[in-house]
Amino acid sequence: LNIALAKKAKIVTGSEMPPFFAARLKANGGDPANSILARFGGSVTVGGVRIATVTALHSNGVDPDYIGGDLGKAMKEAGIAGDVGLATGYVLRFSNGLVAYLSGDTGIVADQDAVVRNFYHAKLAVMNMGDGFSTGPAEAAYVINDLVKPAAVIASHANEVGTVDGKVRPGSKTEAFIKAVKAPVQVHVPLSGKTMEFDAAGKCTA
Image (tube, rainbow, N blue to C red; front, side, top):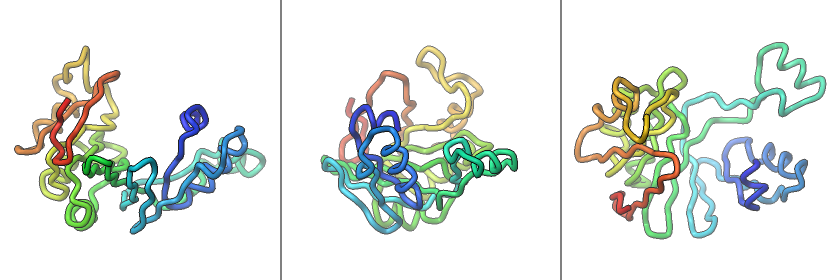
């Protein structure tokens, strides 16, 4: 929300999230029209980037603090969150032809093969691999090796310190994921302040 307000950027989400973000934008002086829907099987194009939503297996609740009032208080006391629809992953097609899959903090789903690979032909994946809340390193590597089969993957959502001084931490989940991913897939580790560039084939060019 803060990024969208500061940049006058658009927020593209699926399920029941767009009305939630539209209300939050409006309440904070933003433009509610900047909250855009893209549900399963459809896509929207923003700034030359085509954005589609795909299946993700994860909870998708809103903290009761965002709901407020007596209802929010009662929900918080009961320990439940507001349901905002099915979780989603995303497939982005950039103007250079690169198709990237954002896993959306998911478990293993058959759509990673049937839809992400066979229909969208994703060449780059950003894959969660932190365990506990979603796929662990071995499960995430299976998604990459056997289902999506991209040219490259960026390790995401480690749920721990994955790097120290720009180096992968020995014994970390990030290291386990890197070791489990099979060639020819290239694994890239995100580092703060470092930008990666990819071509249409999913090759890291910078």
